[in-house]
Image 1 (cartoon, rainbow over the protein chains, first blue to last red):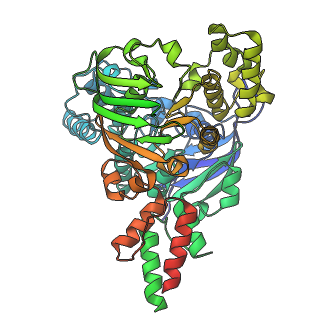
Image 2 (tube, rainbow over the protein chains, first blue to last red):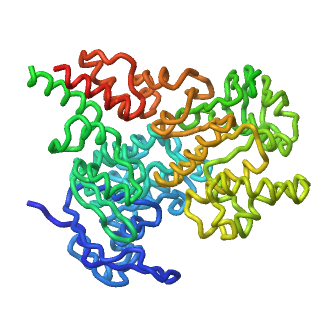
Length: 278
Length: 282
């Protein structure tokens, strides 16, 4: 039974300094446990929209409901328990003097038991390859390490909704994948995951649903494998889908896909069809 | 004669415990388009800084080995002189734009060189067309898109008329269209005979433009070969944390499933031809 966890109802948002809406008449529902990618050009409204989910922005018009509550009645601190937000720039969120303090701060504030804190902190530090750095000063870490520290401190709070704003910033592919694997594991445990990114390979590896933003509006919203075949609409939003979609379309025009396709899947599909053909 | 000669170069940053470059050697011929890939910490940016003399002249540490750029030793030649041979554009170049309009941004370093007014105007006009920013020339960089800003940074580097352009992840903060603008520009420079070195995470992009790829890891060069030869090493690249082009991965997966594919495709067009042939063979 689908259970909406985020509902966006005719959302409009305008920055004080601008004349036009940064988000204009956006409607969408995200169910509990979904893994959603939000993509679109710089300035299309992605980040502005997701900042409504944790109350960093309040609607100019319309409503945003998170876990049944209207965000206009909530403080960002009330939402922190449900919504974890990992910033593009880790230095916007890091503040503590040691790595350990940084990661323990959230769970301490949420009143987790000492034992539980120790357990989650060790786990996230290990998974973010930061074990052994507990006593280091965050600002002595490399940019990639600070990014992972920022993620670790959000993950330590075990939020039911996790928002990752461009996981590839300052990371190479391996580091991005390590981060996404961790996010994916939380998703399998039932956490709702929302990622904004320019990296379409990451999207096709992890997201089951893709929302495309263009000029403050939603241009496309659907299963990853369907959205990536809307070549013309994507082009208007300045997005080039992963090549395996163009390849699949060239070999099997109009074929129905029931899940996102990756190079190994296409290879198997070709082999299967060869066997059928014989 | 090579335009870049690097022989057994090692470098350790003053504060660091480990060497950032460990005995790196390479040569680049004039007019080559060379991609450089590798995980974080591989030494890619360090290599770019050594070539442009920023290391050891501005960023200090322990440097050994020989670096010649168009015959000039990069460790002793003033950075301002090298910048007339090598233009270096970095990831956050857009953030370093400091003038109030694009024209000033391009002209400023030329004035610093003490060039005559006519020469400055000539270069400015040429560059504005090359990077396709003529209509924007009097705008404040603040009002430009990311791709436009990065093209301004490339323009400012090119105005020095360097024979070599180094793009060090110059597109990593751009969206796909912005990245394409900068890549197209790099490609048009190569057609004009410039030597281009491009450090890039997005190997799909390199596959479109580079003749040759250098793969670095932990301060060393692991592979240095024509791009097709490097991309064919799908398993090796994955091991290094580099995501090979999906078209190459698809052919590689077919090969593993026992389908002979011959030379692996590296562009979409090549892959479509190959897969059509294979799927019709049935």
